[in-house]
Each structure stands twice: as C-alpha cells, then as structure tokens.
Length: 455
Image (cartoon, rainbow, N blue to C red):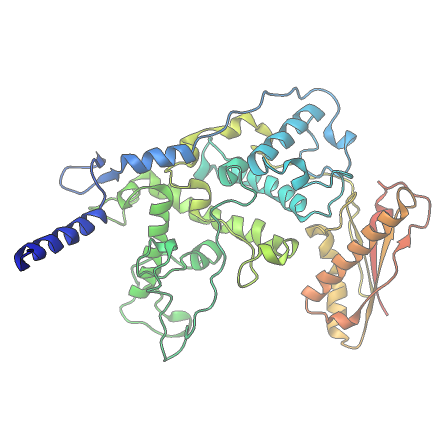
C-alpha cells in the first residue's frame, strides 16, 4: 500500500524533474571578456553552437570564370545589372544565384525560359533589385559588414524567401482603448524571446527612425514637439530590440555593452551594431518597401506590407553571419555598385501628356521613368473631371500577339501607378495596344513606350 508520505515524495520528484527540464543542462561554457567580478562573460551552450554551426556553413564557390570576351549586355537582351561582366562570368553568377536561392526550381524560378529577356515574372524584377541591394551593402556599409561582405546566400541559405523576415503585425483588439490597451506588450511573441516586452521592436527602429535613447533630457513629460519620449515605456521598446539582437547573434548583452557603464562605447561591437540598425533601416526603406507593388498579394503581410529585414535575416544565430565566411570575395561583381545601364531615354513629363519607356521584355516601370508621371498626376488632381487615356506601343517585329500582351501589361503598369497616386480608376482609360509608327526593332525604346494623355 502506498502511504501519503511516499506519494507526496513521488509527486515532488516529478515536479523537480519538470523544473530541471526547463533549465539548460550542463556543460555550459563561459568566456570572460572583462575584469573578474564584473559579469563581463559570454555564455554558450555547446549543443546549440553545434546546431548553429550546421546552419551557418558556407557553400563552396564555383570555379572562377574569365572576364575576357564579349560583355553579357552585348549578347543577351535586357541585362540591366551585371552587364559589364563577360558572358562566362555572368553565367557563373547566375548559376551561383540559382544555387543560393532556388536550388530546386532552377532558372525557371525567376526567368521565363521561353524568353529570358521577359520581365513578366515578379521574381526576376525582385532578384534584380536584390543584386543591387547586395552591392549597396558591400559598397556603402563597410562600417557594419567590413571587408567580409555579403552575398545572396547570406540571407537566403537555399530558400526562395529568407527564413527570417518580418511584416508589420496586425492591429490588436482594443489596441488604443480604455477596455484593454496592452501597449503592444504581454503577448508572448518569439520576436522578443516570449518576454513581456513590446512584441514589435522592428517598426519603430528598423523602418521608422525612432530615437533609441533611454535617458530623458527633461525630468517631466510635456506635450507636442516638447514631449519627453525617453520614458520607461520607450526604454521597454529599446530593450525589446536589444533582446532581438541578442537572440539573432547568439550572444548576451556584454557582447556590446560594458556592465560597469552600459552607456560606454568602448566595446567596438556596439559601434558596429549602431551602424547595423541604420543599415537595416535603409535596406527596408530604400530597397524593400519600393518593391511592395511588385509582389503578389500572397507574398505580402497581414497589413499589405512587403517582407523586411532585421538582424536575424543575416545572422541567424551567429555573432557573424556564416561565422565570418568571406563568400563575397569570390564574387567581386557584388562588391561595388553596378554602373547604370544606358539605353532608355528620359521620360517626357508635361501637364497634359507623359511618355514613359520600358526595358526590353519589361513590363515594370522603373523609378526614373515613373518620375515622368509627376506633372500629369498634378494636373489630374487639379482637374477632378478630367480623364487620361493610356496607350501602350509595341514593336512590329516578333510575335504580334505576345507584343500586344506586353504593351497591354505596360499600359496597366502606368495605370496602376496613377491609381496608387490617388487618381480614381474610373478616370483612367486603357486604349487598345498600338504598333509603333515604323517597322522598328524590338530594341528601339520608341517601340517600348506608353503614352498617357489628358483629354
């Protein structure tokens, strides 16, 4: 017969075992980084390190290709970046990207295999912009990536979409209500290691430029532009970002901070992180957000925003992405910004008429061409009864049906740009696709234009 005492001891043993299971079992390694007794230590779990090491192994680079011979832009159509590479070097780079981003799908993930110059797949347009973003990181942000640099693999690791991106979270019930304003806290979200801190540390700091300062300059909060935004609540948002950074890099606070003087900048890692926050913010605002309209709806977040980067996107648990593997040195084409490719005339921008040009096989309006709509939009806004007619032109050479579809897609792109600027869709009239005035070759920009005229 089991006595009450024995039953109680058994229950306590089960409880104790459960509590111990929630702790990290030994061995745990520590590395002292400061004076004894100052808690300047990094704590590592060897089992987690072994797992992270497997996830942060860099693939071997392909054999280098000679940069002698014809340029890629002279052999292939619609090469808007990397056109200065030789055909061999260009092919090597495309093969590398396939291995980094779409090893299962192959070239067809981004390209129309029947017409490699075609830009109808959004993945190709995005991939082009991501190459430029990688070049911008390596060129403009050496303060964060140093000479190691990054490649597409740094984020993608063989996945079409990087495993670690973020979207703006959905608005919470009673987010700003007397019934229960949680101030974005106590949600138990992975973004802040399931702590009670504000669960969205990214929007204010990695998209917006909210001040990360914790110490206030004035004792009492005021209102308007004099309000003290450095209160305890703002500190909690800052700590949420710090928790994210710690988890992303697999380190604790002493990696960047001095425990004897948290505000000290003596540890170089803190400066590197300072630049990293600003780099992520620039990448999101200048490279990712402008691509929002390029992505299909199923690739956008719950609030219709594009995927964005944070510290985990590159680091993925390692204090240096891929533990410092210098992949970029094997791809010098990614170390500097691509030279702009000549070819498209400047857009025509008049009060009553705009003419915009597209690349070969392209149906997406690039940034410079889109600027040609500014005056037209201003005129439409000032005359609310006016309508605009949009005509897409195409070449007389090639497949007439395919040319007409491409001209139609270009006209729709211009229409979408107008409606995105606030012009009502019923004020925009799409005309039937038109053949260019002369028997022009497909490479002639005049055969790849859209005209928008106010009636």
